[in-house]
Amino acid sequence: MLCIGIETSCDETGLALVRDGRLVHAVMSSQADIHALFGGVVPEIASREHYRLIGPLYDLLLREAGVGPTELDAVAVARGPGLLGSLLVGMAFAKGLALGFDIPLVGVNHLHAHLLAAGLERELVFPALGLLVSGGHTHIYRIESPVSFRLLGRTLDDAAGEAYDKVAKMLRLPYPGGRILDQQGRRGIADPRLFPRPYTDNDNLDFSFSGLKTAVQTHLSRHPELVPSPDDAQAVAGGHDAPEGLRNMCASFNEAVAETLCIKLGRALDGDDGVGVRALIVAGGVAANSYVRDHTARLAVSRGLELIVPSPPLCTDNGSMIAYAGGLLRQGGLSHSLDLEAVPRGRAIPDDYRQGPAGCS
Ligand code: KG4
Ligand code: ZN
Image (cartoon, rainbow, N blue to C red; front, side):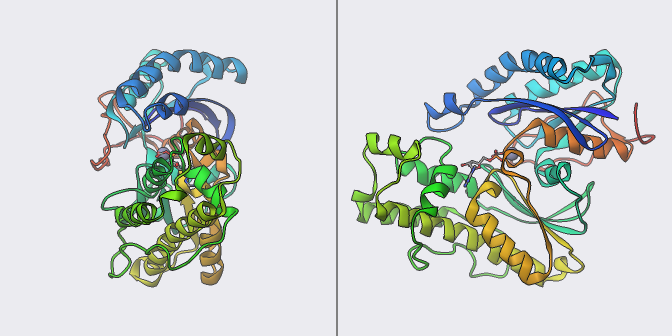
């Protein structure tokens, strides 16, 4: 079964072809440079860019893959959560393909797709505990199978990636700044007492990263010399070493985020929801973070779990994960009708699949 996947939930336009669980080809265009000028994603610009790019990217995908449009067996599209205007561009395009080529349409939960993405690279193991850490979300799930997710914990305010991006902004670093803070932190030494492990002094699985952001802000107001000049910030963004004090602060911040995530994951594994769990799946843009990867790897080893993390290019938004997740849903006979709705961030994604015969059409 050949499934095309379409991802337009934020600022990446990604399209990909997956055949029977294997990636055939993927194309993608990131708008990060445009939004960097504004210090964050501007929704109106994002949807216009998706609209401008999606047609040419579709042509490019099929041409480079040597696939004709009539060979498509299903079309999968990220239906949310995301920016509504951006989602609608991908959804309208996907519905056009479904209608035009008379193939099933599958609306994919973008967050579930992130957590399944590693299945393109290795076998997934269930039940699994899933940590989704991205620019918009910090969610813990118990995952029973590729089509059965139960949300156990979520962020009450800033997502982990958002905390990275906001701290990067305080340091005059370009958006999205997570990767730069990671890189600089690796070259520094963490002080474990500098920043709190926020919202861990409780017995739940939710997160709150706004306190950590405020702690960094307070630290910077006491040490304004840590904030680089615009020229120095540009050099740091380009990969040059930041001064030692800033590198150490980055290391401390990375440690605080990674440890906080692992405290909650450990708690989930200790509770009823951890019973029988065989694997820890970590996904989303922040799963590319080296501290998060190291800390979760250590947690997995200590609990005898398999750690499943997609390779860094599959961690950020992409069409491959949508095509892959859509293919799995299709294999289970699931699809949607043409009245499929986009779901903006903050609203739960309904379980509104149509059940039909498994496989094509
Ligand atoms: O999953 P993603 O591509 O988009 C969303 O759906 O949000 O995640 C983007 C987020 C951004 O906040 C970015 O700063 C963060 O992932 N990110 C990182 C790293 N690479 C990307 N954060 C920390 N360390 C990294 N290496
Ligand atoms: Zn994402």
